[in-house]
Image (cartoon, rainbow, N blue to C red; front, side, top):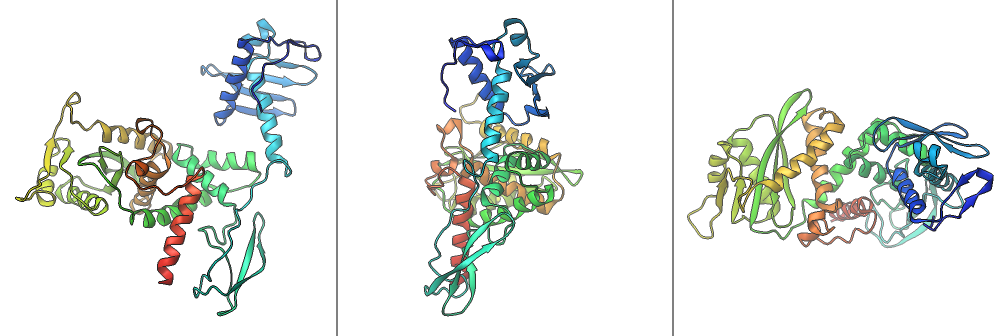
Length: 403
């Protein structure tokens, strides 16, 4: 919908709609309400409830013969308020999504070039494979006789890849599994359970992690390490994070039950393995375990040496603020999850969150770029980063299996 000035009046609705910046401002605020999940709820055919933006309850909007809202702006000024605009936009968006002519989810059809089973290029089209929600082109290999569909990481999946990647993105943006399932049903008409979404998180978390761990980032010479408490299986465990200061690239996220030297050494080893190098400086807090772990993993008599910076102050030029800010991001996600269930799945979840942080989420401090782009890992993921990252990961894994 284009953002255009509204007309001077609407006699049929008995609402004075001012042709002014104020009216357009209400329209913009209406868009902002729709953009926030769960702000609008339809009670009856022509009755809606919109949450107040200042947190003081909610307003009732009706659209029978006339538009009416219980908010003070509409009640006293008789103008088209932001809540009415929000409901109108919400109705229009829902109608577009429900219409097969104007909005339809589809699978991007990619032509197969080689057989998935034998690697032969002697293949032909062989009809389609259909299930309840998806139609996929099928191919046949003339050499081995196998039929197959293009496996872009979503073969034999009941739901469209865009639904799956939408669920992944909403989850790591802080939306709970229950709310994700409600969102998909409300706007796309697909009924999906919480357990199915959790299965997607585990499955694609492993696929992506196996792929990105092979990539080599170009890092700066300063690394930061910190640890934080997270709840796992009803008890507190420790989450260790190692981040490159210059690119914000998160090298390691490791969960351990304790906070001793062995645990600190393990996260250092993972960081060195993924970074393919050693930094000039390693900044940590004052945890005693870091001293021995650093000596075991980084100390050498040869130059260049790695210098250990412990207990920096908040105002120091070299400090640990970067990785401590990351801890805040993790806490926001952990708060919605209400703790992790068990250590094995918790580690997969933290790895997936690390990959979301590195490859999906743009950073304001990096001028809208991701840490992977700053580290010169340009995968050209396009608009749907989740979808294309999974495709690239699947192609790489398939090539390794054939070889």
